[in-house]
Length: 296
Length: 59
Image (cartoon, rainbow over all chains, first blue to last red):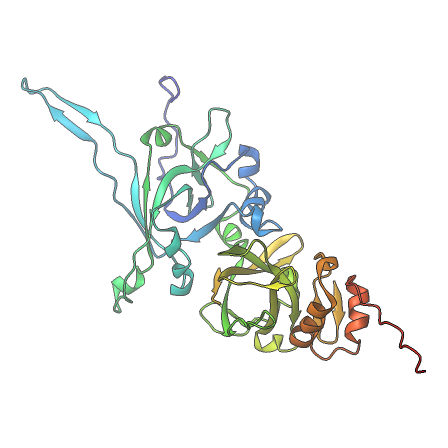
């Protein structure tokens, strides 16, 4: 924290605007403050040209934001003297303005540590700075809720809750409000569009082919933009030493159907593997699928 | 990127390790409606095509 000095009062007495969005980043992702004020800075982290370079995403939490921070501990001594003896790091529940299919993608991140940057309604960012003056998110943990669909009414509207607990109150003391050159909606628009991929015909043991279907998330509309093998990335392998998309037949792309061959050199893959599909336009990822487990 | 019939094949992979037999199986299972023969596909991808022995003259 900076040295305390009397700093005057502004003529305008406005409140900070509501938190309406949340940037979720891999831990210790930093950039210059100048870059953090521009959309290009966030594009390099949220929608770069390759999946390997993705460092985070943005969640619209317009459905609701509830602070859950524990009040500071106040202790009264036996003389009646009262003082603050402990501060607690901020925690809150954010209700994502996303589909259930989008929310499901976060299940595997339950309890994971991320860096968070709250985005205000007007696009300003609440963010701490590193000792070197770089922009970094608040270090914390994210929790999801596994539950059946909520009934209609107010509870339905606040579905898809993310509980976020910051780790360190010290980061809050050093936080700054950055005025950005972009609006919150512009930031929202750079997030890749979600695609759902699924196995239609199981991995075929003699030739290593699998028929996959790609649809726009939640609507089920076929997605026809994944016609080259380079758009289908092998994310992980369970038993094989290597694996890649060797061939693709996309004659039924208009129906969202693609026949792909995944091999480990000439050999077929022997254990389940995971894939992800991407579409890159103009050096930025515009469509991004779920990670799909292909059983063998 | 190289295309045979309706199928795009990943030519960035190291095909030189493939045997011709493996390639023929790949052509049968993965390549749809190719006009090229497996031998022609093998040449494009860099898979070694076995040389056929000349027939011995009948005495």
